[in-house]
Image (cartoon, rainbow, N blue to C red; front, side, top):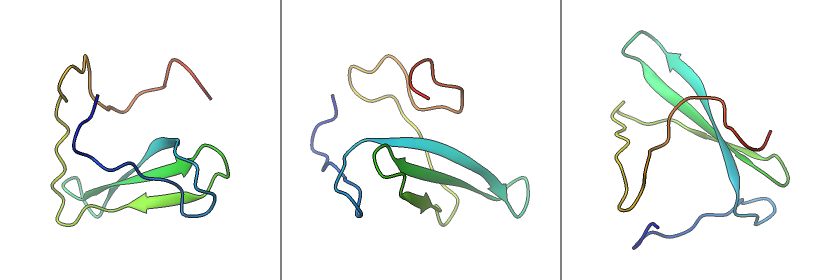
Length: 76
């Protein structure tokens, strides 16, 4: 469970569940990795562009894994 973090919701419909997608690296092999968060309800999309390109994914407390690029085993 994540503690001391604020939940986010869709700015269009207020729904709180999202699907995450990678949009690839832009510019060069060291270019920025862009992400997209799509609302599971209304399909509104937010693009996440880290600047400068420094984004670290770490294991959270009591988490068996971390977010990675792969096909999910549930949902569609």
